[in-house]
Amino acid sequence: MFDYNQLKQVFHNIVVNAFEAMPDGGTLTVRTTLLRRETSPHQEGRFVKIEFSDTGEGIPEEIIREVFEFYYTTKRAGSGMGLAIAKQIVEGHKGVVYIESRKSAGTSIYIELPVDMES
Image 1 (cartoon, rainbow, N blue to C red):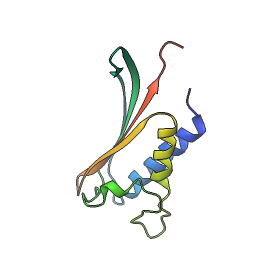
Image 2 (image 1 turned 180 degrees about the vertical axis):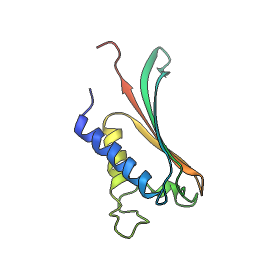
Image 3 (image 1 turned 135 degrees about the horizontal axis):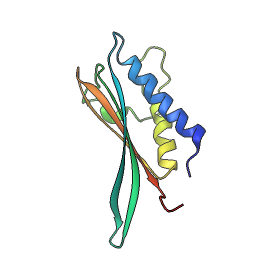
Image 4 (image 1 turned 60 degrees about the vertical axis):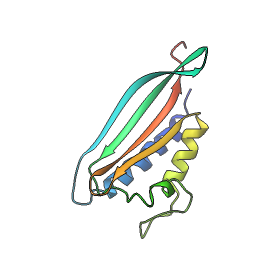
């Protein structure tokens, strides 16, 4: 139900960003959770939530909304395409991606994808 190569690209982009945010080392934690939530008044959906949390530098609050925009980068060698493409791929799989970050305390990126447990 998922395009393996596309999701591999999403995970790769997130992991590379996490390691770049921890130039002196740190911890990257990946967690998965199965969620159930109402998708309409008479239907419940199941989602897999994938969380990538690093102990890096964090993202300043004033730019956090821009990190998923095409061509936005804070890196000298960055293209600003990685997270924008990741968002596009996740949304193409009918999922959502969002981010939480605190300056000097790390960043968490969450991906929620619908899953069909019946198949």
